[in-house]
Amino acid sequence: MGKSIQKIRTGRLSLIMMIVFTILNSGAWLFGNTLVFPYSAYLPQLATLFAHISFETNGLNIAVFFWVLVSVGLTSVYWFAWKKSKTHANGFRTALFFFILDSLLFLLSYYTVITHWDILLTIAIRGLIIYHLFNADQSSRKYPNQIVSLRVNQT
Figure: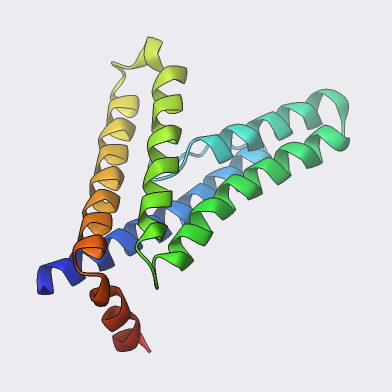
């Protein structure tokens, strides 16, 4: 059972790191910087890129706010999943579902340049995040009381 606690902790750490890097990337894209940390979600960044393009072409308008809200909403899904993973296994399942969907859309967007080393690195890191979320989900479902003991030990 010690390994299951470690898998749950690793899954939660991986998820919060992905959220932080997604916020950093989205903030950078919003202001026109192309800084990219590969340990992040793709769709919130894409929405932020649309906001930046809308701002550059039409100035500050409703489309900019719409795309920023879409980005915040998508990132919030992961944040709520992280919060939920503290008390229930469904948090990992939710994050895993959305991140797999996010990764499939990433692959669809970059299929023409999939052999570039930076895209391959991003794919490998996405695989690592999926691996951590899957292991955490399986451990939390196999030993549901471990989530409760993990929560008690952290306070």
